[in-house]
Image (cartoon, rainbow, N blue to C red; front, top):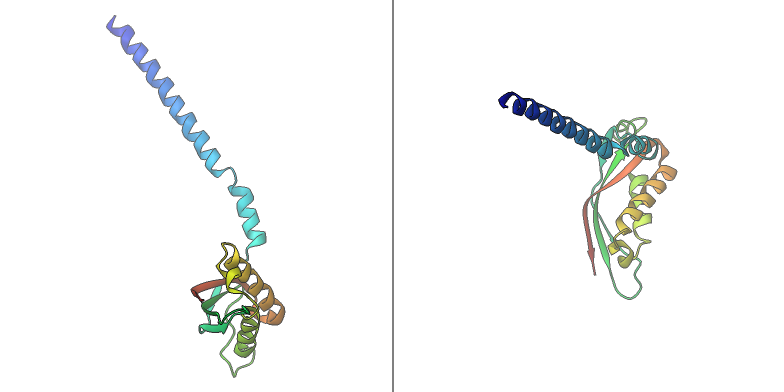
Length: 152
């Protein structure tokens, strides 16, 4: 009788162990299911950032017509190529063009749009697109906000 219980216990333990292995495998597959597509999407959608360029903060009047509204924003640029040389050298960072481009975009926004849940992401997308068009040699791939304050 003792032997039979040991055999049953061993069989039960094996079934439990196999069940646990199967469960872990299913959970692992389920958790990683979208990663292949996600990773492929990231490579094609999000650029590979190799350098970050810090810009001095911006304080601008927003386009609100009813009252004076201001935006203070700190911005770093994610670049797809190394940071160009300092100004004064060949291939230098065109700081004036970068700041002018950013200011041109920021001053067209209204405070309500910036405070909306998707507002900041839309602003980032617009800044990237504008910088890529106006300063293509900089190879801007992403915009990071390091400070963001809307004063109403």
